[in-house]
Image 1: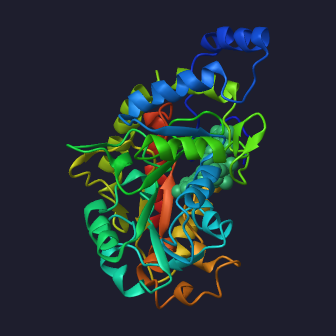
Image 2: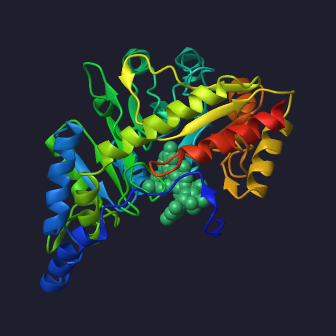
Length: 374
Ligand code: T4K
């Protein structure tokens, strides 16, 4: 991470006013309740459930553990079909459960798992599908559910990027069996580190509550070999306050994104992702493809020239997870199996996007991209 004061990063956290946090800190210092289902944890859990329009939610210390524990609670085994175009946490969560990932190619337009390619990968070992709503663009959940129902598979959504995405007539977070969110410092909605798991019934939520607290049923009874996935009081306090500012952040990002779209659409070789049909986008990311030449060269050129100007765009998600050392040897990791994902990973660039990014800087970034590509 660069640290020059004029640096422009891919994102910046949207933090609540510090003075609003002080009363929460005073309360924590007074009561000395720091964690283990404290009062702020419970308030945040309720407020968050209401905000997201869900009934069953568990808070976590991060999104990765929510995934690991969610897979465990669903008793997923064998093989799981997933996307290679994501943050490594998605696939690592499978490995931490001794599950083998089977990589499926992605769609050109949404960059999400391609439902048309899932069925050919299903074998007697397959127990689930784990798609990711990449950059907050919703997966084709109806088609995925149809396939899951046909073969009796579970569906686990890595929904780390979708906070604040609003579908017309349905709640994206209630698709599949479970969804997990991330509240990491780089996310649109942050609790510094943090995450949540959304499920469909109270019994499952209770099971997750045990699993994320070592499996304790009461002071002396352990029901299962749980782990520590709890969110603490400080994170929860930040979460309560951050709920008050997230809608404004989305509105600010929307305006900034619109400036980007306006300027970038005129540049040959830049592909934008701005067709938000059927949903209100959360503007979590500003991904573009640099479509010039056959390799990653042009994209890397843009990335490096921006970097020299202290503009730190990011190549999320390059390299593909399937090309990372722990996964390279898998049959499904071959480039022939994943032509679209490999092509996209060589061209993807996420540009800086956050509510306080100035329009002047957006113009500067777009001018630089234009001068490099023309
Ligand atoms: N599934 C998906 C699809 C995910 O994208 C993620 C996380 C997960 C699962 C796992 O959820 P968690 O267990 O993390 O809750 C970041 C994040 O570490 C990671 O959480 C995130 N995805 C991923 C997309 O991005 P890095 O290595 O790129 O972060 P870093 O530290 O380079 O930060 C990028 C920029 O953000 C910095 O240049 C400046 C800014 N920044 C960052 C931090 C940490 C700040 O301004 N303040 C900060 O505190 O991975």
